[in-house]
Image: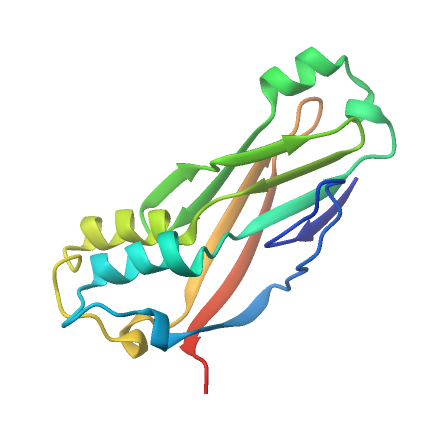
Length: 157
């Protein structure tokens, strides 16, 4: 099995936006039009406008990792963790030898902002620091795959 961090893919489930373990994601500040924004507002911006979707692209050497398709589909799960927040990835697309999973970064960050009590505080991008994400992929027939990735969010120059 091959594993790749991937934030976007095409209809054939090929990765069109490969990522690394350490990335800087540049955001267009001109599209963040909220007056006196809070951290929650920023989470909404990431979800609805920037649409940042950290994800993974998996390829198997045998269809469905050597299992029956229905069993593979029913037992496959992918999670994304940040801080004390763990969410099941919202998007899962499965083909016989390829799987992609993604989650909306804004949804995960908003959950963590609520847990840490900063959701309503004034937002400053510099206060985010490094965002350490943990991916947990439960693939039927093998041990879970656990990978970490660090993001830094910055405004485009």
